[in-house]
Structures are given as C-alpha cells and as structure tokens.
Amino acid sequence: MKKCIGCDLGGTNLRAAIVNVESGDVLYQMSIPTLAREGHDAVMGRMADLFLQVIQSAGMQKDEIGSIGIGVPGVLDLENGETLFLPNLPGTWPHVPLRDTITRLTGLPTALLNDVRSITNGEWRFGAGRGVDTVAVFAIGTGIGGGLIVNGQLHLGIGGTGGELGHTMIDFNGPRCGCGNDGCLEAYASGPAIAAMGMKAVSQGRTTSIAELCDYDLNRITPKLIAKAAEAGDEIAKEIYEKAGFYLGIAAASICASIGPRRIIIGGGVAQAGELLLGPIRRTIRERVYVMPVEQVEVVQSQLSDNAGVIGVACWAALTNDRK
Ligand SMILES: [Zn+2]
Image (cartoon, rainbow, N blue to C red; front, side, top):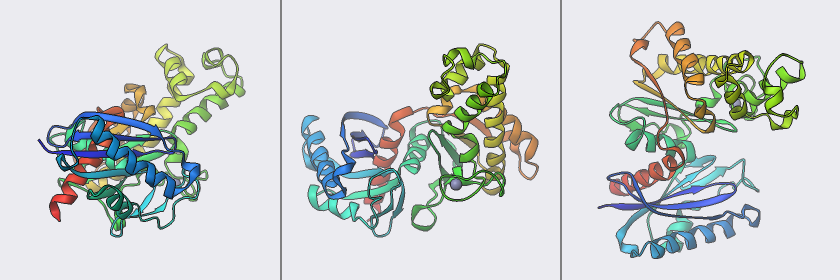
C-alpha cells in the first residue's frame, strides 16, 4: 500500500492527511491553525512539524511515506517549487521556496499544486470524475476556482496556471472581478455574487421569502439561505439560481467548445444547491453549443467534499515523485 501526505494550506487552517494513493482513502488526518500573520517562515516551520506529527500520530514511520503534496491557494512556479502570489495570505508569499524548504525540514520529497487543481485531480481519480479522460471542474465558493483534466492528464499550462475557469469572460464590459479584469464568471456566479442577487431582491422590496428567512438583515443572506427559499418554492430565489446557473452554463459552453469534456463537475459550497444550479447549467450548454456532441457531456456534482484536495494533491505528489 502506497501512502503519501496531502496538505491543504488554507488561510485559516493547515490540514495534513495520510492518503492511500492507490485507493484514495484518507487513513489519518490532523488540522492546526495556520497563524498566517506570523509570516511564511513560521508557517513553513509549522507545516513541517505537522507532517512529522501526523506520521507519528498515525503510528507510522517516515520511510512508509512516499512524498508530500501541498495544495496552495494561489499562483505557483511549479518548475522552481515557489509560491508567487497567494492573495489570501498576509504578505502574499512572493518567491517563497516552499517546496525545497519542506523537503529540507522533513527529509521527504515534496510537490506543490494549486488548491483547486488538487481538488480536480482528487475528483478525477477517486470522485465524480472517475472513468473518463476529459473533465472540467468549477469549484464555487467565495470565488470560482477551476481545473481541467485533458486526455487523461491534469492540465497544467504555464507553471500550472491553466484551468482558471472562474476567469472565463462572460461580458468584457461586465462588473469588476477580484482578479482585476472586468466581466469574469466569478463576478456573476460566485457565492458572494449569488448572495448579492438575494440582497438586491430584498432591498428592492420584491415579494420573496428570502426577506423573512434572513430576518430582514441583508448581511445574513447566503447562497444556502437562498437555496432553502428556492426549495420551498420561492420564485425569486429560483430565479437567482437560474441566473447563476445560466452564467455558469455560458462559461461551461466555452469550455465544451475548447476541450470537449465528457464530464463537468460542479463543486464548492455553492454546489450544495444541487439541481437548482445543475439544471440551468445543463440546459444552457445544450442550448449554446453546436460544434460538439454536447448531449454527451454530463454535468454532475462533486463527490469528495472536503477531502478532494488532500487526496488529489497526495496523488499528485506520488506521481511527481515516481517520474523523477
Ligand atoms: Zn477574474
């Protein structure tokens, strides 16, 4: 049985899991606060300690672990093993030699991968993407992350930057996106964008149960609350998910035309709305793609929830290490 460590470097928590990379099982895991304000050197020290600790707590020896994979929330230089821009971590970590530092501190070969590409790899190997060779993943939360599997391989592009599906443009004159561009999908269909549609409906005084559900406090409106209203039959709430699903479908239609995916996986917290969101995505791609057999493209919900990233990056580390 081959085991690797998969780590999720989050702005709030550091999570490390020992993963059986042949079955996708998480054998043991631990989580500690990132304490990102202490700076990258301190965080890397805590990461290395956590990895050694998780091996010990699982009752294993270091030589039973093949390698370590770290899922990183931002832009990386994969060739040099450095972080380039982590927008959610203080200091943004420009040119931090994360890979080699962890290798030096733990004595284990280490590989880096963007966090949503890690999720993509996990879902493809052991989740909703199993059995097909070309997959697109949209992970919808605070932002919209993405990832692509093309012809049976995780697509990387320049330095691993390929697959940012949340920044597919919906309207080049559209609202400003967090990335600096105008009109990206993320500005239309992320969790905050969906919540904003609910806030707008309530503040305009439209007749919707969202108002009662949030106790007339706009700050309490979340995608989850809107989904609850929609499931109870609220027309405005259903309309909001229709709209978000339409925008996602428009972006997905472009992906269908570019890579011909057999499956499109919708993940992240917002995907818990299920068919409310998946239905309109499916309808939109069927209506807006003519150049490939779009009726064969499946649109499904992710399956591995919180574990997709650590499983995916552990498998990535195993593969990267085998190639050396
Ligand atoms: Zn953008």
